[in-house]
Length: 382
Image (cartoon, one colour):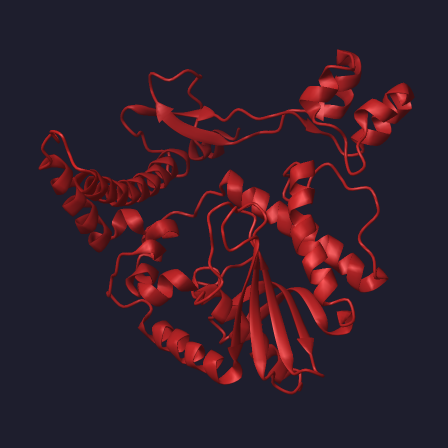
């Protein structure tokens, strides 16, 4: 799936830091994180279940595979989390499936596009709902959300292109079941069409500035891929480091002094960690994709967990039908480590395997044999 440079998911970053777009050509392709991969798998579950609701007016009641299309294991907690999204959307859209769509691409221009999770339009009430599922634990507010505004504008434009009357009001819903916050798992932001238009003007103006050398630091730096090459970010980080170096021991500090030092150290660690993550990505890219020697570090194979082969449940039932009650759950097989405890090696070797987990860059003194880079493997025909 292609991602727009000026997309909805990264709108918060480029709308607040035009220069971040100019840095994109300096950075290597990003590495998918485990959290991102699990989020993709959870979104696939949501899409599958809601499409089944739309077509059959009931939840998906078939047998789930062991893995999502991106090869991520499916587990009970993931289904339980998506229950919140599926039940919420199914309840609100129960009488309006004909005007509800999942994973639909919306655009603000040829260069500005994204894919919203769920949209639902009520012609009777002239109201549009945009639903966004978040699988992560970090709190994401619904109000004044740039991504939400981007998707709401894109969804309104999509309705316009289809010749439908424009909505009078639009609501952005965030459903985040893994985030425990006083605002709850479900948060909403409702705008009139006129209020949404002011956001469209703000986003459009930011898009016109994107790519200029205007750099700003803030919370949008969290997932910026250009952090290691950003002078503004480094100057901010360096300022915090200078404050840390200048610190003196606290003797009988007051609560106010402790609070001030903690605040400054928390802010400093945020910027330092962002620099570290960006440098880690660059170092790995140099070693793996460019075949360069990074002094003091080596590439090693990542450890992986056992996974089921396709059709593992059928194979197990054919070989050990007596284990049906112990090994099968309503939605899936029990986890590989638990299954190994109740079957012998001959059976486990037929239904379990260890996938290639890729590589990682570690200090040379770390355990694990050094392995060749992708570039070296390519030249050597491995």
